[in-house]
Every structure is written in structure tokens, then in C-alpha cells.
Image (cartoon, rainbow, N blue to C red):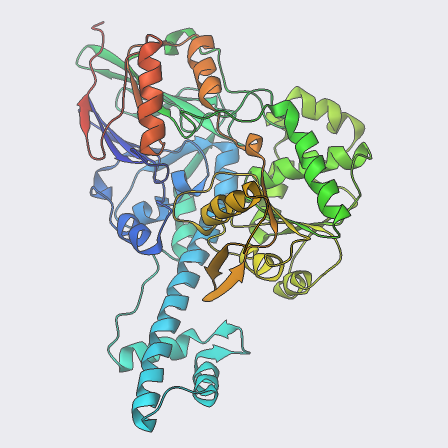
Length: 530
């Protein structure tokens, strides 16, 4: 039996590992690489194997860097099933079509830019002068509907007319909806047959709603192999969800290979107990300046956690009760999914909210923005408020428009509550904003470019690292040391190279046998004979 490490190897996104037995090819996650547009397009478009050979895909959780290429798999000869928890399947019903919509929108915008550039060159050549306002308006009228919506039919016709290289989406909304027909949702702690002599048991990973640690047992040629894939491991003592599983069934405890994440393999989070006081401090200071708090947030998990803490702060009269706007259609739907799965809430959530007849994620001051028109009006609202908007790394979505209107005003705060991958706008805001804060905000503010325009970063930038849904170095060690798993070997994945290498080195010092695979590397699993 072999494992090949294809994605999230010495990097964070694009989780994908292939377990090969004598009879089956089992894919562990099928995630999307997220980063620079050109690099991401190249990595995501082509799978490193024929999808037709995959018998089962085991999905650890619904985040796009773990699930986002499943529609690529299912539209290219995959005939197996996608195995996950029930709540992961429910979340994917919204996350995958949303991802398809983003793929379509990005392709449309790139095609619009290509056609616009060609038309401007043609007009300039005909007039023998540089483009003017009139020419720009004429082209915009041709390529757009009602100033904002792209006229894709006209754009595609012009791509064909001028023999241009148009961009095709990675997959469409329809492809994503079709992919959902391959999903089978199961409860935790229930062995699931996924191949010839192969079973998978899903245990709670405590990362996000429905996240799972997968124990895969293979019986082959008189040998028994046990693979444990952590997916992403959550934090301990955080509200809403249960802690990562430490007590595994007797038959699942002897692990030949643990494939383990390392997102924060050399970092420590703020203590969970400090999250609410720090959030309170940001809100009060921003309110006293007469500003608003803009929070780029992942629609799944982070948004609901923020609403939980805000609800507590408002109930306790700890902060001014500012209007809270959730400006993300996806976050709105995912919040509803959270509300439909109270069976996975921890005891604290039951005691704090459910036993008092309260929804943790809904209170008088919260408003879920529905329309684009509402969102645009909110952009221009100068009264103090809180906005929670996607995308979490500021690469797309409505958050960009809130930043466009708020980033240049020193009254406002941009609150970073999640991981920002390298080469994203969110990472640039975090790094440059943090440096400006450290300097005492002296001198000229940093300048950031997005929407083809430069904006001075005058808004305060604050990071609260404890909101991360990933366990830090000590919490991952706690999982290894406190669980009843007996682990022979650990493959360290899902971390930027410095984090993975550092964490593997620390594990070896702690007495574990750990290594960091390279992308595309295949290793053989050795196991006991029955």
C-alpha cells in the first residue's frame, strides 16, 4: 500500500493525498490551491491523475482548500463517491456552487479586460491618438449592462470575432451542483465501507462544523494497515464546537501513518480566554474614534464565531451596541446551516444560549445583507458599525468594496481574525498595516493597490490571532500526547515549508518519527501481519 502527497505539501492550500491499495485508489481531500491568480489557475486546472481511477474521495471538511476541486474531479470521469460527515455535506451545498460562481465571475472579468484592451487599441489606431473619455464610455456601454453587470454574450462574441484567447472557468455553478450528487454524509464514529477491505471512521476534528479526523483501515494480503488523516485540527476550549477527539475506539488506535497538518507548526495563538476582551477593546476604541470595524472573514466558521462572541458581549453590555452587518450571501446561508446542526455544539454553547431559547448567531443588532444595493449603501454609511464580509483573505467579494470606502480613513479599523496566505491582499494589509502601527503611525501610510487603484492604508490594522480555527504548535502536540493513538510515523503536511519543517523537527525531538514529504512523493506503508 502506498501514499502519494499531491497537495498542501510544504504549502498550506490545495490539500490532496492519494492512498493506493491493491484494489482501490482513495483520495484524501480534493482541495483548491489559493494564491496568485496565474499560479492558482495552473495548479488547479489539471489533476495529477486520471479521475477515472479514483474509487472514493474522503473529504475531511468543507473549506475550499480541501473541497474546492471536487467539481473538477466529478466532471472528468470520476464514478466513485465523496464520503464526509452530514454537516460537511450540508455546508458544501452552498460552498461549492459559490466557488463555481466565483470561477465564472473571474473568467468573465478577465475576458472583459482582454476585449476592452483590444477595442481600445483598435480605436486608438483608427484615431491616431490616445484613448479618451468618450472612447472609454463607448466601450463600457458595449461590454456592460446597466454600468455594473458585464455583457458576457457581447464579450464572448468579440472574443470569437477577434480570435482572442478567452478564459474558461475552472468549473461552473452547474458543475458544482452536479458534484453534490456524489456526496454521501455520515455520522461521526461510524465505520463506513469505502473499498475492498477498506473502512473509514470519521471522528470530530473540532476545526469547523463537520470537520473530521479520518481513520482508514485497510486489510490486504494478510496485512492490516491503519492510516489517520487529521485534515485540519481545531483548538481546545473554544466555544460552539467540541474539542478535537482524543478518545479513539480500541480498534482504531494503532496508526501506521498519521498525515498531520502544520499550519501553525511553529507559532502560538493568543489564549482562547483573551479573545472576547481583545474584541471588546477593538470595538470600544474604534467607536470612540467615530469609526467602523471592517472584518474580512471566512464565511464558514469564522463568521459564526464572531457572531457568537458579539452576541455574548452585547448580552453582557460590554460594548456599544453597534449595528452588525454580515455582508456575504454565502455566510448568511452557512450561518443557517450552523443553526440546523445543534447536535455538534459543545456544552458551553448549550448552556450560554440554547438553554435560554437563544440562537447563538442571531440578535437584535445583527443584519444579514441580502442585495447588492444594500451592500453598496452600506459602503457609504459613515455612522459607526461593524461589517463582517467575505472573502477572508481579501482576494474577492464584497469585502473589497468595504475596504475601498474605509481603508483611507484613520477612524476605522481593519480587524484581521484569520490566516492570510502569502501573495494575497489580506497578507499585504496585515504586514504593511502592522509595520505602520509599530512605527507609531509616523510618516506616510502604506499604499495598497486593488481595483486598479492605489489606496493609502490609513485605517488602523489590528490582528487577533486567537480566532484561528487551527490548533497552534502546543495544541497539536496536545492532540498527539493526550490522545490514545499509538503512532508509528507522522507525515507533516498543510503548512508553509518553514512551519512544516520546524514542526517535524520538534516532533522528532519529542520522540515521534516525523518527516515532511515533497510534492508528488510516494511512500510505502508497512504494517503488522495478522
